[in-house]
Length: 419
Image (cartoon, rainbow, N blue to C red; front, side, top):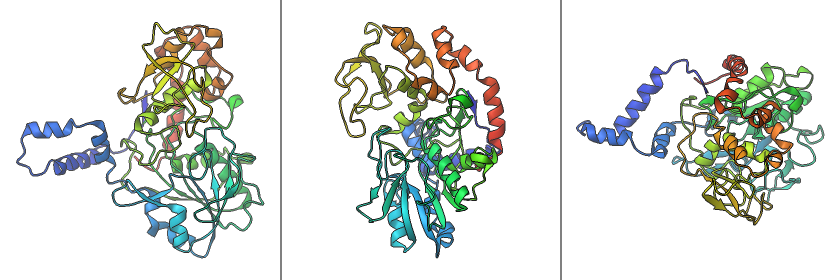
């Protein structure tokens, strides 16, 4: 495991202690009461840690002057929200800016669509947003990169999407293509930053260039430990855009965020990541998407369970039946009894966990059918599959990542905005 290194850990610790003391009421409370408060559920602790984070979209005073008199394009989805004071509700960025008379020319939507209701991998077509009547251009249909015609008349582009910090989560691929298109058209890009809920560690194999795809475009590990804005700086700085192009970036950073904070997403970032547990398990369980094992699409515990009709049922007590549901209209093993594990109450992961994958392979009825061609795209290398087939332990596999991770972390430090 490679944890991100804070430049100054003393100040955040003091702040957290102060918050705990305040939450406990007056100073006359007993030590036992303080201990009880400190041992509250992880969700309560998460709420305390994130309570003072101000996402960039909420910092309207910092970016509204930049939009004045400009024809604006916006890359957005259901997570692009200016939160209310309680941080559980809010107003969509597009709706807010339209009410403020910002001249929005069009909206660009990533995978899952503008309102975030489409299946993973589903073809998304262009259309009109019923609420605002603005044209919506899909970046997950016929083209994943805006065309020059689609960018005509735009003087400034805004990117505001909640990411989850995994290489194969396609919003960072959309970011790449937006940056490239803006660089070619000489359109400045304004990024409104949001926390990375998996931003407190870096782990996994580094993607090899020959396995580049939309679920992995850059030579980074599976878990990169960066916010969207930090990642955009890395794309520019490492010259990953076509022909070494540079995108003109402006960044509105968050307030009161650092990489040690655990962030609970108030809005699910995609249909099959419904809660904090799914988001935490996602980097580890997504490898199953390149196998004959279901990760719970077509259930109410997406990315919190896994199973397959082809796992040895004598080794797994838990079972489930996937069936079509919103966000999973044609789930893997639809209607078939799948044997596996329920991880919905599993402790929080602080690193990638390969044990689920390795054990499932060992207990597969027909190992020759376990992996699909998609696995290499997700892993970013053929080596991981070969290691699992060869019977390598998790420790042996992770040891093979050490050199690549060390080099990446050194590069990553250059682009961090937050401690």
